[in-house]
Image (cartoon, rainbow, N blue to C red; front, side, top):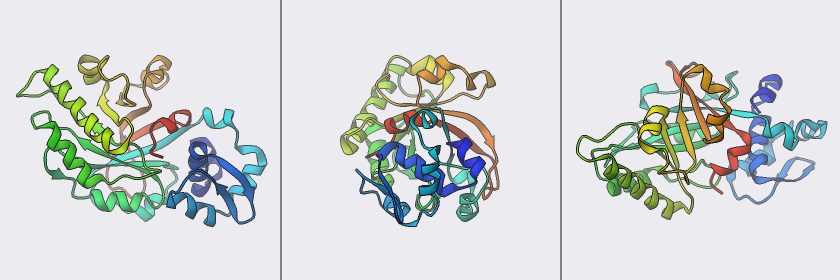
Length: 269
C-alpha cells in the first residue's frame, strides 16, 4: 500500500484500497467503487467521491498477493504535537494511512487535543484512540474514563491500551490483573478484544505470555527489528521510530507500520 500510494501520489486511492481490503469490493462501476458490508460514512463518501479508483483497480493494481505484501504507514499523536495542521498533513508526501490519537490518561485526565485530532483525522484517515494507563490508579475508573471520551465506531481501529511503566503501589501481578480488568470492561462495550501497546522491553519483561489473545502494538526502535520476521509474526503493529517528520506537524511524531494482511484484526466493523 505505502509503495503504491507513494508511486501514484494518490491519497484517495490509498484510502480506497485500505478500506476495500477489510470490507470487500462488490463491483467496479460508474461513479466510483461500490463497497458492501459496511455502514461507515467514510466508505460511503469515498464511493461517491473517488474519481481514480475504478481505472486503477481495473489496471490490475489490486490483488490479494499485492496487498498482502504491503505495509500501511501511520502516526500516533497527542497534545505533545501541539495544534496540527490537518489539511497540510492530509496532503503530505508520506502517504499516511492511519492516525492514532491519545484520548485519555489515568482515572480522569483527557488529552486536550484529542477531540480536534480525532475529528480532523477521521476525514482523511483510518483513526484510532488510545488510553495511557496510569499504573498507580484504578483500572475500572480508567476504563470508564476512556469509554466516556473515545466514542469509537465502525471503520475505526479497535480500542487501544498503552502500558509502559511499573506501579509504585502494587505488584506486577496486581498490575496485570488491573490491565485485564480494563481490557475486559472495554471489550464488553465494543465486542472485540482491544489492542495492547507497550515497548518491547516492558512487554518482554512483564507482559509476554499473559496477554497473548490480544492484538499487539509494540514499540521497538532498533534497526534489526524492522526485518525480524519472528518479531513481526507475533505482533500486529510496529512502532519503529519516535522521530518521524511529516508536513503539518511542527515536531517529530511516532512512525508505525501495519501489515495490510493484519488490518482486519485491528479494525472495528
